Image (cartoon, rainbow, N blue to C red; front, side, top):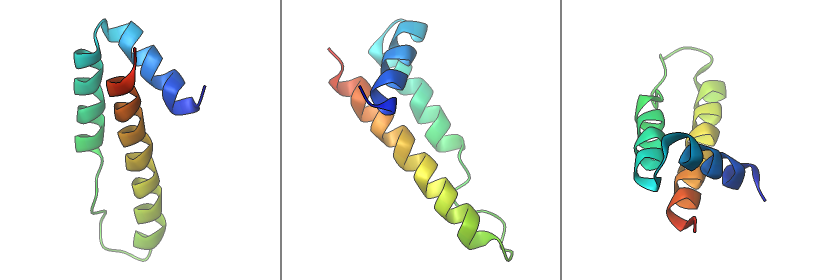
Length: 67
């Protein structure tokens, strides 16, 4: 079981339904700043944000696929 699958299972169990878990993940994705402040660290932060968003999108897909 991948980390994303474990997180999906944890969220479904915590929130009671797949729909509620998906809402939670959507809120996390939407709250992530996708355009950090323009400064010398933008490339570093951009990569970290992209990785985090990809992780949560994978978690969301695992929730959808959860049986």
